[in-house]
Image (tube, rainbow, N blue to C red; front, side):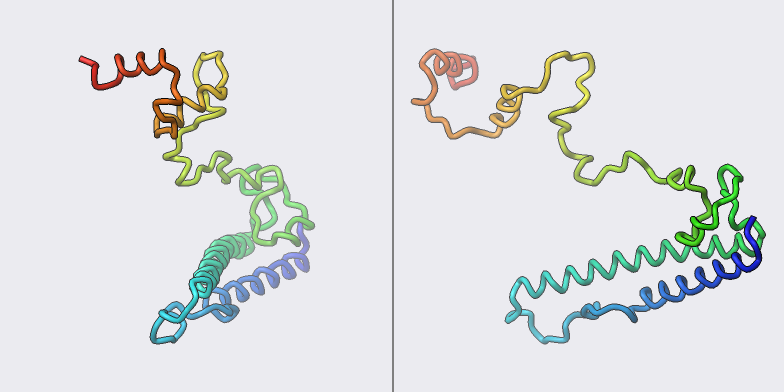
Length: 184
């Protein structure tokens, strides 16, 4: 069980972190360009790398702001738990959270066993939603592995650099009769 002195110390740490996050959210720690731009009248003389640097700094600030906002939400929950008298007790299993863990992550409301309970293990990016699964995909009961021939068939649909002289005569006749202009 946490002592009153430990709770007070953790309460101070939570409030200090909350104030640091507020500074980040207000832009006090930012060294990047303000959102309205660099103050130059024209971007004509700027090198594309300069523009990329500005964009990168803005993206970094946005990521830091998102992280600070999320941490402040967790801090608010922890401060509320201190007021309710439930701070230091895992909200999932009801076991006591060790003081050492609370010192390292004072905004936590879960023990180490349940720390990742809300995190999705199978998070997919937007690109993965539209990509063909390809190699390693679940192919049902098919016992044949995805090999070089399958790869060639998949990519040759988009065209090849072969000329008619690259294709043997018997294949040319087959393609001309089954796929070419002679097909009825």
